[in-house]
Image (cartoon, rainbow, N blue to C red; front, side, top):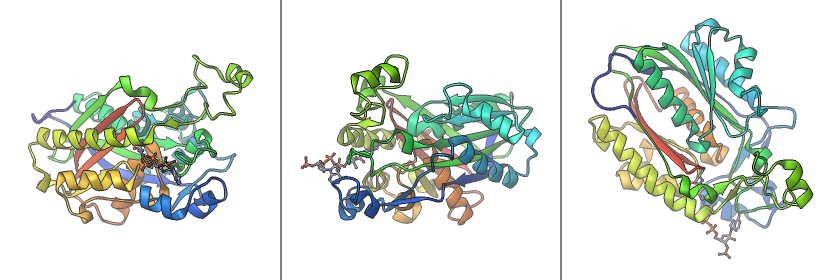
Length: 337
Ligand code: UT7
């Protein structure tokens, strides 16, 4: 956790990139698969469509696209990168990690690597780790990536979840600065007692696929995301709101100092509830859930990249990032661009 005392170094966002696969799954497509309607999905979630990978495209493929763009915008060379932090719950393999595979793919030969598993709050966790490394003086240039191929863990027979998720990658280049920009405050929190509100029962060592397959649990969607949506919804609104107020206070600011909020895109009603609690106008909250759905750890860096590219976020802006996910995990970060 950062605090408001002035560190010698800060982690500045010097580049961002993102990637979504070309294939689109619309609400009309979902109407043909499960008992749902475009009207229900749009009014209850704000989602119109989401992008879905082909069988061949992997998370590392998507992340590589996003990283190349972030590295180019940061004006770095591949050998400059000192640490790669990948947030994902859908790694290509259990071993090696996505971050190791990205290192190899992009020739980031001087980097250390780590994967972080904090579900939809994964990017905020990765950025907080990167910020702490940079503040400590240990590293100067770190890539943080959020990437998910959620289509592989989505049960397309369950209308309560399959309407929500999409595939995407987002990458952010963080670099040491000594000026008053960069990550000003970060806050992370979890409540492991609520883990089974959003979880994947099968596929870990506790319940390997082979055993579950024999028991018929895979046909029941136990190897996919299982969620008690209405409960997760309530926790998301409360905890992201509390975390937002906490980092604003840690940074010595008030909500009126926030120029743009980049929230995790889980549900437009969650985003609206947060906006109202913070007393912010619609134009100060970045929303792209209509086009991408919930892309878990890719959600915040994907939205951030879009907001930077479209100049909704500009140099000097105070940006509040918020995320919430399975675990349960959540976090917030206040960053001056
Ligand atoms: O990213 C990590 C964090 N994730 C989240 O934050 C997700 C949080 N949860 C949500 O976004 C919402 O809870 C959902 C969108 C998942 C569900 O919306 P809801 O308003 O909480 O619906 P519900 O689960 O309470 O269900 C209400 C009704 C039920 O019907 P009955 O029992 O009232 O007859 C559901 O069966 O809506 C029904 N329903 C649907 N109807 C049409 C649930 N899903 C659908 C659907 N289409 N896709």
